[in-house]
Amino acid sequence: MIDEHHDLLAGLDDVDWPGLSHAYGSAQDIPGRIRALCGADDQARQEALQSLSNSIFHQGSRYEASAHAVPFLARIAVAGPPTAREDTMWLLTRLAVDWHDEYDLTTGINTVGWRAAAAEHSPEKELPWYEEQLAAAANEDQLTMLREIRDWVAAGNSPDARWSALRGYDAVLAEMPRLLVLLDDADPRIRTRVAYLLAWFPEVAATTLPLLLARTACEDDPVVAATALVAAGLIGTTALAADLAPYLDADEPLVRWAAATALVRITSDPEDAVEPQLLGRAVAELTAAAGNPAPTHVTDYNEGDFHGHIERTLHSLPTGAPQAALTACLPRIERDRDGQRTRTALDKLFPTPLPAPLPDYADLSARQRQLLHALAEHHHPWIVRWTAGTLAERGLPDSQDGLRAYVGLPSTLEPGLYAGTGITPLNPT
Image (cartoon, rainbow, N blue to C red; front, side, top):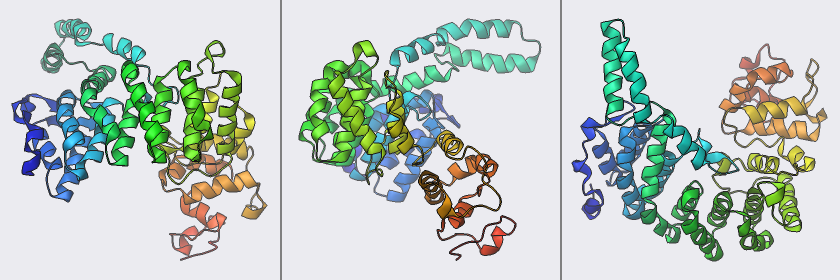
């Protein structure tokens, strides 16, 4: 470990890591992984980050060790080696709000509902149930298993994922005073990461909203500014409208998009809406953005799916979404976590199967071509695999290489592999 970062990890060995658990059992390996984040070996640092992600944030789950790691990760994010800070901020965000949780919602995170649900499954409420099961256990194997779980719950744990996730969230919340200084960090990537993190902590909005607006006012990086504006919209109310309005006139399209997104976000219902003329400007901005390609650099919201975010934002309007904007967003598949957007687009743009043999790609409608081209070029090939059945039902190629051949892009497969598909590669390799 680099000597200059030694003080960051003071107290690391005072934690009873062997007595804590993570995804793979005892957490005794965690201090070594955290130390490696501060090391000079870049490969070891990357391996440590991957190991930490897999163990204390395994597929979105948080564990006993997760919350105990947060204070040390926060210190590294603020004052650790430059090579570790951004990745550590990413991990802190995941420990607070999982990608399968509410964090990507255009309407923000409902911490009140989350806390209420977690409270219903607290260790105090779960323990009596396990005691009852233990008393009724019929054999020694059941007794052994139930005793282990009962003892674990009695030690202050709950098997409910919402409860364990909330412990990670609250651990990051406790570090917020330390992390807020990063809004003024020299590195725009760090400013972006902390602005994004603040979007999911409405309980401290009184403190963070002014800071997010101040950051936006002096920010020269459009991604940072846009991230901060959307964050402000996610934790703000209609009182924020006057602060957001000037950014609708920004030169940078991404900043205009963010201001419009935030203005729609703070309109929760017709009785608590932004002034109609201002809201109309915001909707017009989003409609215009829907008809254009995504900016080269986008924010992390909605997993970076720019048009998908516009679509979800407009659907949240209490007055209804403009159809022109929704139609423009439909064939633009940039990311799609579970394939649902892709299937919806296929259903609407190809309502009936295409005839066999397939018509020429050039004979399809503009939006049909746009969708197929986006899928053929997509850098996440599993989206096509997830929607292969829908593609086949529409008479379309059901693999990415098949789509690439159909739309006229170079193939990554040997021509012979297309045998029996009815497709001839236009640019075989």
